[in-house]
Length: 514
Image (cartoon, rainbow, N blue to C red; front, side, top):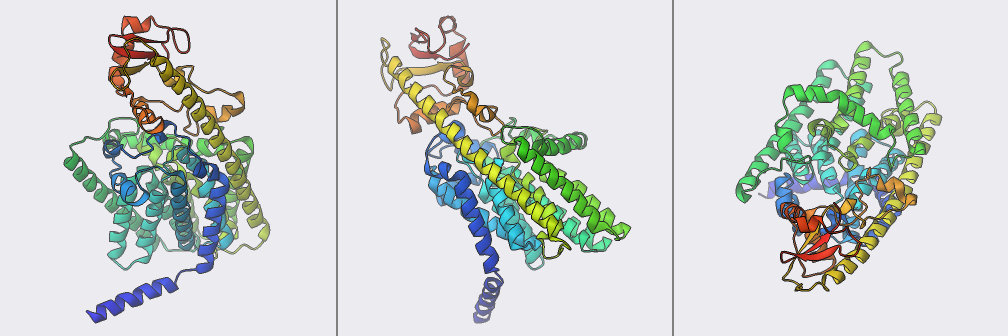
């Protein structure tokens, strides 16, 4: 027993001695600085809207039917049930720093490239889209990267077991973050190819990665079935549900590959509310530098190395965007955080990795400046997005307060007893916030909305958590649709015209839109 304890202690001490303190300090500083500059407003302000109206986590059934069962354990035990912005920000910074460190160690990054990568991952549009609804999934990102670390650094058998557990945890928190693991495996294959790996060990490395991903997926499916069996729920058959993914056949997967590549380049090079002209130009230049770097690195190398490098490089966009393939194209930017790992390619090729020193520093300096520019523009975009979200919240809160004051004046209305129904669609009503100055955010490419209350579930959360109201609001879409179809309701004018709220068959009805 004493020998086992001594061996374990020696192993832990050896692992601690292997930590690169200077690198860890660098990525930690980059994570803290970039996250606070980009998202400090979100960490220090409260502006519930859309999904973030769940200020007190009570959406357990939603997480089960979406296959994210681990969130029901993680939120109460680790982050707490109350969605406190500052605490979320603190966890995010720590998890991002650890993620940056793991990636830097796996790819042997220099400190400058590790800092830039951490900044890019911490300020990109995916983070802004998630923090605007207080659901930043850095925990899933860390687990995906930890899985790759386990498969590369742990002893035989323990590597597969550790990686499978981490991948299962990642999938059970937020499925799309599995792309980080897929992307890192492909980047490691690209690294091995550039180092001149022979075909057999290179293919063995790729097969090992596939086996690890498969083990993690199998463990997740088993855990998913157990969670559904224990709760009695069924998977949601919706656009962001898993039921449709499990129906995909080989033909559908193959047919979706071209669209997945197209979506990858469209997301990074096409126009959107977060991707302005300067950012698109910087990304295009980085892609050109990556292509040029590959040509330079392959000059004078054999056909084997060229074939391996081109294969890994060709698969990288597919791996980083595999959620688009599995979700049949139904993806948005908060599901595509891993796409920003692609900037590692020009970094590594131009001296960002100690394995591939650059003959000239010009290329590395240009890559660094372009990445720094992307970080700066992402910070500006994020701060604008949070200001817009705060204005939307204030606008909704002001009008909702007035609406309930008007409802309280209706004859026969009893607070807390009389049912209250909103007929019509919030996002198509005069409750929405409009300002041409914020048009880039209103487009929806950052998954933002122009009114804080959107779908039926948010009605309940808004009144219960945000307003602290005891109003007996109806929060089931089927019931609300039935109310809206009544002739008396259809004859009512839309908010805010005179008569927009009235008692109809014992229910206080607010007519939002036709």
